[in-house]
Length: 120
Image: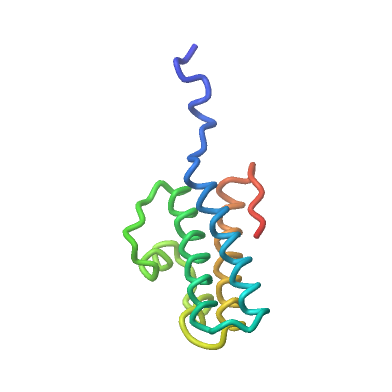
């Protein structure tokens, strides 16, 4: 018998926390856009949602995150057209771009960790 009987089923808590932060930030971005808040404020919430989604995927893959979101997106092979409107455009366009990235990451996570629900 192993000293760590659950060693093969341990999931990094940070992975799940990052995903929760991503979902919450995306919800905040949607609300801010719906309320007509500034594009910059909506963009900040979108950026956080995407960064947390990327950190979730990198954590799942046991890869470090160095703070460079563009490099993280490239490392995860997220297609450029998926996130092209994330940093420019109106608030609703930024939310749509963030939703695309989070959806792409969720699809990746479903294939890597199907035991968890990856809704957003």
